[in-house]
Image (cartoon, rainbow, N blue to C red; front, side):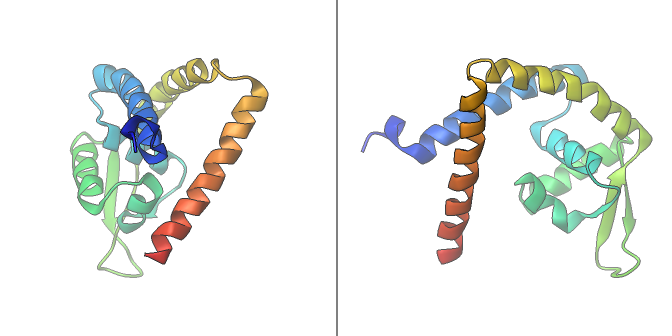
Length: 146
């Protein structure tokens, strides 16, 4: 087997290249890490969420989420509070400065995404989305099977 022909490796290489290209934008201008951006972007989609739910939604592990939240909170971007229904949990939401930062980063991220997608026709884009959905579903089956 050649590593550069191994599908999981190729997917990882593409994901890393895209991630680094995007990180260059929000990293330089706003001193955000990749993990902080993922947390910020996910929080922009919800009003408030348990910190324990962020990992699955951002594909970050517990420590990555914790570090990202700690830094975002220190910078005034997010607010954490104890969950009223279960005091063992924390809930988090974007603070107004975090929402403002999100609005600044999104157009740049979308411009980078558009640039990437220029390499594909509209039909290829839809096919790619469909294929990625299928691969993700299959990967989850593989994970669940042990």
